[in-house]
Length: 125
Image (cartoon, rainbow, N blue to C red; front, side, top):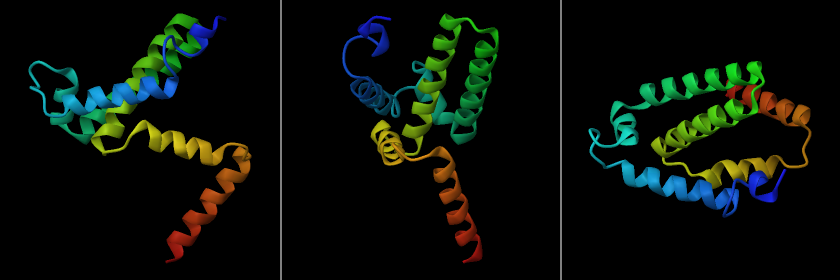
């Protein structure tokens, strides 16, 4: 696979996500009749969550079919709608990337055990 294909083309993946986040912010106040994203923002959390769920399901179905182009296409749709969700809650890609960086080098099993312990502690309080 070429380097351009691996990193998604020009610019770093983080740059691409930040540019998309900037565009989504500009759509927040746009006319819902002329902007799909503005329409999602206007419809609120439940509409955005529904789209994320639909795109997650379509990604799973594409993976079950095993067609690489469909997997990529559906994953792009899922990431896009997840970015809308983040923007809706005033979050940025950097927030997610910081969390992934925090977890880097940590066993997934250890990380999950830590989350469970935190949840138990919160439930006791």
